[in-house]
Image (cartoon, rainbow, N blue to C red; front, side, top):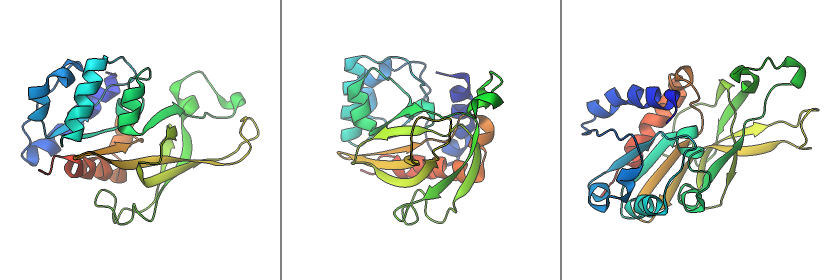
Length: 220
């Protein structure tokens, strides 16, 4: 887990507690292979960037979600997890590819080199979906995720990467920024903004994450 991931996880605990959740914090993905524990879990809030996962753990997570356990997270904690696992990618439906950076002459060697101003735009579906309804399009200055994805996701918001002179692509590329996914009896919500605590504290991002946790939670 990344430091920001852990801090972000702690940041959502008061919200979950105020909504009556009994919270258990795990420091590894071993619990995913515990069928009994996963069957008793209504919601997984994952905060694991990159790392590795075993086939047994991936199968356990996928089976739990298919049986009704909700899965959600933000940024690299869910969209850039377990790059070597095609089964995990199949479960969540999308994966971080890159975050384009500033013009080379403006880069100074820090993480800010990848902070670009961009807009998160809600889709027609997003303007009606319980996770995102009523939230207006908003601007961010942070990492802008370029995401590879499949057609089973319900895209609630997008962000567009312009074709700049120093980039190798030749037309704007639109990526999902927030999506929901039905997997068997379970629900998945992925929110790609969330690189740092200030982004998580943005009212729109915070609202999407909080609503996403509630919506993804087991319903039966």
